[in-house]
Length: 541
Image 1 (spheres, rainbow, N blue to C red):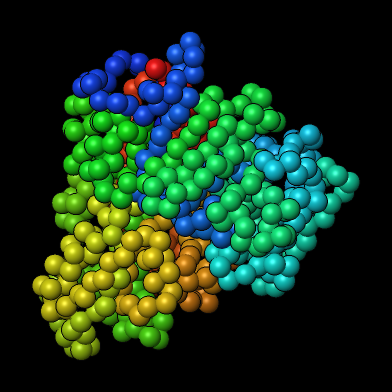
Image 2 (cartoon, one colour; image 1 turned 120 degrees about the vertical axis):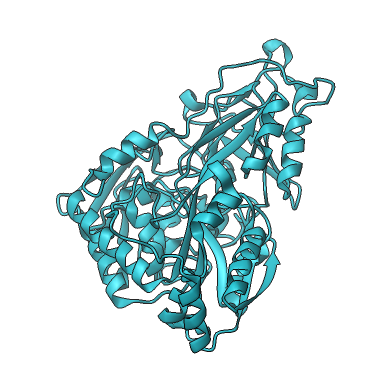
C-alpha cells in the first residue's frame, strides 16, 4: 500500500461518499406524532415547504472569514458561494461563481472569468470588484485580523513567501490572483467553505463583523433569523442565478440540539428531518423507528493535543512520548466507538494518506510510561475539553477525556478535566492554561496539505498544540510548492514521520460520517468535507 497512487485512491474513495438521494418513500413508524414540515405543505405538490436539520451546537458565526468550525460551515454552505466548488461526491473542483479559470504555466497567476447578472442577497451586484474586496479583507496588510482564523490557511502569508501577493480586476468580470510562490493546493483552497466564499462587500465595509449574525451571500438560500441556542432559519432565494440548482424547498431550519439522544428523539418524533453527530449506540433506535441511516468513511482526525509551548510540561518531547505510551489507543477506539470509527495510524485518513505503513505511532507501553513520567516528575496535568459531540468524535470531548484520564491514572498522573460547550471551548484553548486538550479536524479539500499544514500554521486555533518546528515548516513549504504528485507524497511521508517522532498530537481515530434521516427526504448531500447541501432536498408530504 505504501506505493499506491494517492490521487487514484482519493478518487476511488470519494465516489463512494457523500451523495444522498434517498429513493425510498415509505412512511415512518409511529405516525401519530407531528412531523417537521407536516403542518405547512406547499399545496397539491406533495412536497413539504420546510426541512429541518438538527446539529449539535450553534454556529460560532456566519461570516466565513471569521469562523473555522463545522457547525458554522454547514449553514454557510447554503448561503454563500465560491469562485469554484467541489462536486457533490468528491473534492474535484469545478467552476461556480467563475465561469472558467486558467492557471499560468509557472503556477503563480490564476485568472477567473465571472458569472454575469448575479446579485448578492441584498441586491448588491456580484462582480470582479466584489471578489477582490472579499479576498483582500483576509490578506495580510489589507484587512486580515487575528480572529480571521482560516485566512492564513486558505490564502497564505505573502510576507513569508507562501500566499496571495495581489488580487487585480480586469474589467467588471475578470479577476487575477497572483501568488508569491506556486501552491499546488491553492485551487482546492478556493473551493473550501470557510474563508474562500465570496461575501457581500457592502455589508463588511460598513461593519467588519456585520456578516457574523446577518450573512449575505449569493447562494440558493437567504438568511432569515438566528435564535441563539435554538435555530437558524433560511428561506429560498427566489432570484437565485443558477436555475439548474434553484432551491426545491422553501424553508430550511438548522435546529440546535446538544444532546445526542435528544436529536434522535427529535428525528423519531418528526421534529427534525435530518440529524448528524451520531454514534453507534443510537443506530438501532433510529432504524427501528423507520428512519434511515447514512454512513460513509469520514475525512477527519480525532486527536489529543499536547501543549508544546514553554508554559506546559508537555513542551518536553519525552513527556509527550511517555504520555502517548500510557494510552492503549486500539482498546480506547474499540470501546468508545465500536464499528463506527477506525484507529488513526496517520494524521490523514488512510484512503488519502501518502504515508508508508512502516511509519508507526507510539506503541502502548504503560510500564515504561510510568517509569519515565516518574523520573521526569510529572504527576498531574490540566486538561480542557469540549462537552458536546463533534463529527470526528461522536462521544463528545468529555467522555473521551475521562477515558484518557483512566489510562493516565494507571501511570501515576492525575488528569484535571474542565469541560465547556463548544463555542466557549474554542476561546478557552487560547486564553486558559492547559497541558492537554482534545480537538479534531474534518478535511476541507481532499489534499494532504490540508491536514499536515495544521501543525505548521501560525494561528493557535488551527495549530492547537502550537507545535513550532522549523524543519517541519520547511517540509510543508516544499510540499505546497511541488506539483509532481509522487514527489509531494514523499514529502508528506516525511511530515508523517516527524509527527510520529515529535508527538505534538496523540492520534486517536477516524470517524465515519453518520446521519439519520426521514425516508421521505431525498436529494440532500452530505459532502466528504462534512458540510450539508440542502438546495436539492425535498420532503414528501
